[in-house]
Image 1 (cartoon, rainbow, N blue to C red):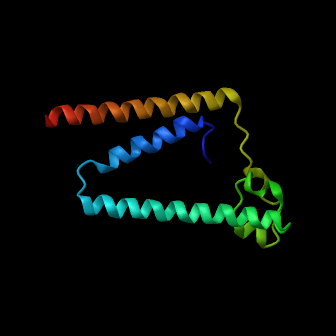
Image 2 (spheres, helix red, strand yellow):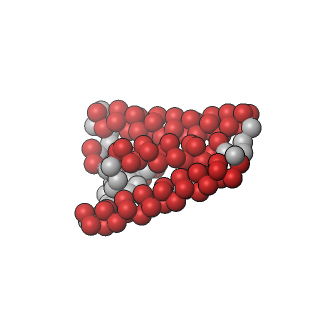
Length: 120
C-alpha cells in the first residue's frame, strides 16, 4: 500500500502536508484536524503493537504484518488466503514512485510559496 520511499522523504511529506493544512484554517480548525490525525495515528499504532503481541504469543503468523492483511483475515481462520496482497515492486518502480512523490511535493511547496508571495 505504501510506496517504497526513504524514511526521511516519508517524514518530509508529513511536514509538507502539515504546512499545507494550516493554510486558511483558524486555530480551532487546526486543533480539530490535528486531533483527528492523532486519533488515526493512535489507532494504527495500537493495532500494530497488538499484532506484535499476538505474534509474540504465537497466535498470528510472523509474516502477516508484512503482507498487508488486516486482523479480520488473520484471526478468522482465513490465514494464507490473502497472499496475493504482497507488494512486488521492483527497484526501478520504487525509484519512479519516489521521483513522482518528490515532484508532487516540490509542486505543492512551490504553490505554497507563490501563495505566500501573493499575500505579502
